[in-house]
Image (cartoon, rainbow, N blue to C red; front, side):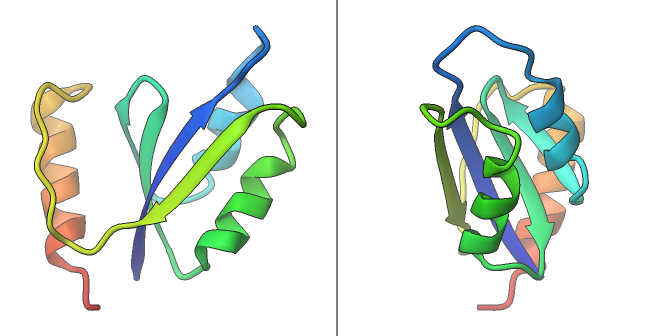
Length: 94
């Protein structure tokens, strides 16, 4: 299983619901305001293309595969998110 960090910048004021729902089709964790972590067998390009379908042309999107080493501070729902991240990152096989 691959673990990806998704970061985005929606340039126009708009409803985030379509993007949130698309991200939630994966096992997910919403770690910061515009930052999620997901697990999937897809490539980064496949994830990007899937999410881009519900974004405007001028919105920014970065999908980065995580390697297992990470550190964090004050995430959304800190204890729950920390447990989820720790579990997924420890399971990474490179």
